[in-house]
Amino acid sequence: MSTPVKTWSISPRKPEGGAPKFMGIFECPSCKARFRAAVESEARVEETVSIKNMVERIKVIKGELMQTLKNLREKIKTLETERANLMIEIEKLKKAAESRVSALESEVNMLREEVKSLRELLGYTEEK
Image (cartoon, rainbow, N blue to C red; front, side, top):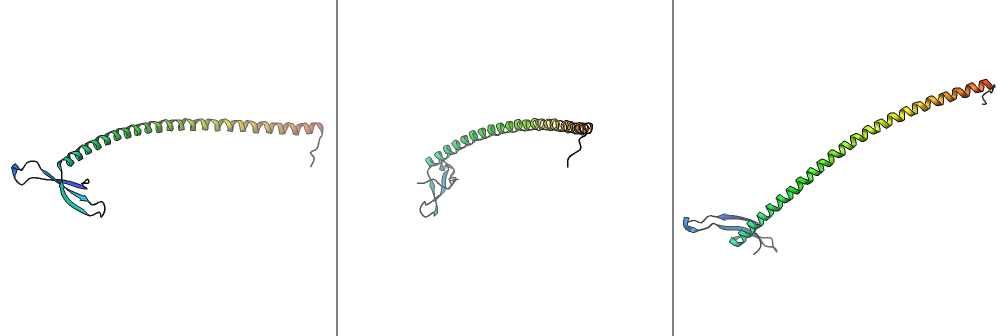
């Protein structure tokens, strides 16, 4: 017999009737029709063991996921710190570049003035 889709317990009618019995809903693999039938106690024990195994597996998976989450949070924090440090370094480099540009502009202006004064001193006229 296949595994039931759903199971439930049925209490005995008489108090001395013994252990509760189980019923289940089964599905025909070929026509997909559903029907009720008694579930053997062995099958119920196997199902309980299977559920316990599944619960244990879920706990293990949950632990692994929690560890993965912790690792990812640590990596995110590290990357955010690195990003902040890189942004600071970029700003410093921008300031250094702007300073260098300013120095070069003033040097070029001084050289232009020097060229102009040398032309005047030597009597050269600008060719057009």
